[in-house]
Amino acid sequence: MTLSRREMSFALGATLLLGACGNGVGSRGPATIDARVESTLRQLYSEYPATRQLANKASGMLVMPLITEAGLGLGGAYGRGALQINDVTVDYYSVAKASGGLQIGAQQYAHVLFFMTQEALTTFRRSPGYAAGANIEYATPEQGETLAAETTTSLAPVVAVIFGQAGLRVGATLEGTKYTRIIP
Image (cartoon, rainbow, N blue to C red; front, side):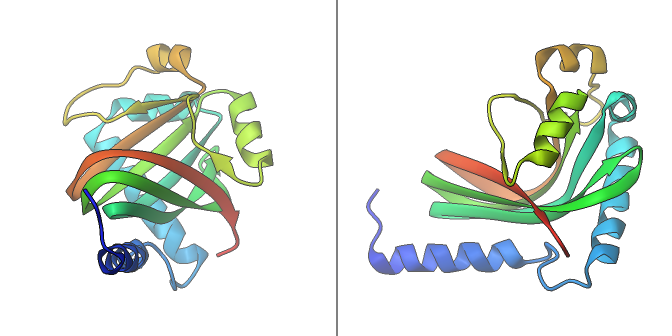
């Protein structure tokens, strides 16, 4: 698939525009992010009750209430959220994602990173920009599916639960994700 310069410009512009939709860009700051984080956690615990046990065992959680992702050849995603330790927000983060490959569409979703070890949480907090890598176990539970903390913590020190997907994005891509501490 070969994209013209015009199609490429349109795809990049649309990605940036969609990436800004509803993700806290231009929001009223921490109060807005905190309200979205609390709402997201209520939804997570309501739809997937076993994640509460996962949260209780975690050293900390990064809650990203709304991530908007779009792509046409080239793609990207953006969202903002909060890092909580013992149910208290300690920092705010943004997530940015870039991708390239055969892809088309847009979607929004929420995700929570559960840091299952103190070492994983410390590494995340000390890094100037945390790139998601092979040390993360991804879980995309279906309605009613359970996650057992005992099995997931043995697989990886960080567990990502992705839920609340809306929209459609299809394709095969190479991508990178980066989390960065922000001051909202």
